[in-house]
Image (cartoon, rainbow, N blue to C red):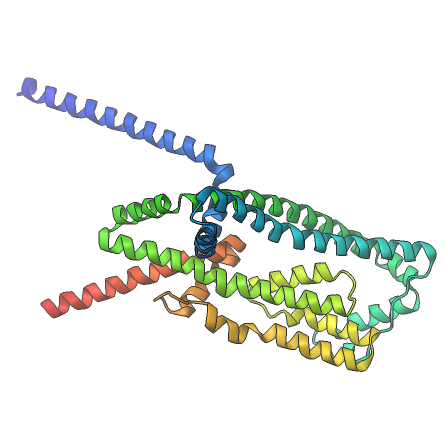
Length: 362
């Protein structure tokens, strides 16, 4: 009896060891592959997002250029890089010019700060403190700078580190734009790859549905969140440029960030409005204030038009996913969060429908 059972037991142990070794090697290989591609994950993700978002425009450009894919890819990359780099150069130039002007006027002893308006004291929470510091600076700027020197140095360091990070982000987007051009040149193959992946995870019918849902959600977020944020930032920049607001490029960039994370730009533009009232005549200042208010509230009527277009998932689901994703993973989380929550919502609804169908059949 012992002789008859030992061989089987020995084979089972040997098979278990072989399975464990193979599984361990597969896990090791997968982890190794992940480590190798880790530096490129963000670049490729942004490339995919950009490619999916702008592919309709790419198709139109391709038609205009007679269906020549390579030429269209080259023209697209050049145009996209120009759209990215031109505002970057303008914003950088604005910051450099403002910094140089402040430095020169400080060296010449002509740098002054206009006294604040009395309405500054009415600002909630920080009004009295801002009014006090502003008044002190308008009376004796050098003494105020020396008094708050540690805080100013800390702010300066943060600005420098932010500028370095922004420079790195620009490089990431340049590479991602090039990747997106390559992906759009092979759009059919990419779509079929995504289709095979979703079909493998679910089934053929649901694979098509989830592939299209992911595509449409990315385009919806690109239009309804990033698109609106860019519009608000550009309009704000135009207004501040006309009113000759110092460092208008920096404030425009901050407006863009506020709009992306779904905060009203008036949180920043309110301070700019107060500044404009302190340096400009009443009529232009009032016009600028009205203009800034319209720009800040423009998302209220643009968002229903652009967010969720072509997507069956309810708009609040997409918006919650975009905001939650942005809080969790930054700008790229806008898209990842929206897609993941939309897919989760659709799976949940399928599960509910399946339960109702089972009850009806019973």
